[in-house]
Length: 86
Image 1 (cartoon, rainbow, N blue to C red):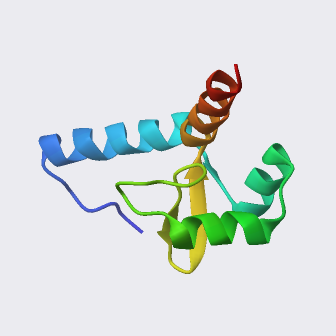
Image 2 (tube, rainbow, N blue to C red):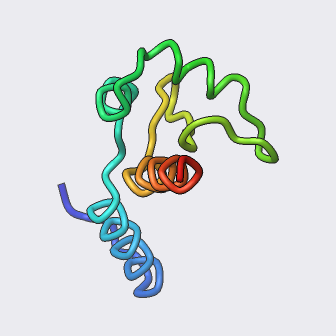
């Protein structure tokens, strides 16, 4: 099936978006629970209790019905916990 012809600027934006995704893989709830050593239920609870003003746990977002995390957000959460423990 031939690829539709897109304007050059649109094509460049699409390539940048793909490059960003390649650099930032999304993690699922199982992976984050394993990384943090927590039950999945804790991550679901944190997400349901979080607000933009008062986040609880690593930042998560929904893709369809699934929670997803970026590796950067999980790393930032871990670093934040390390610095608050000192």
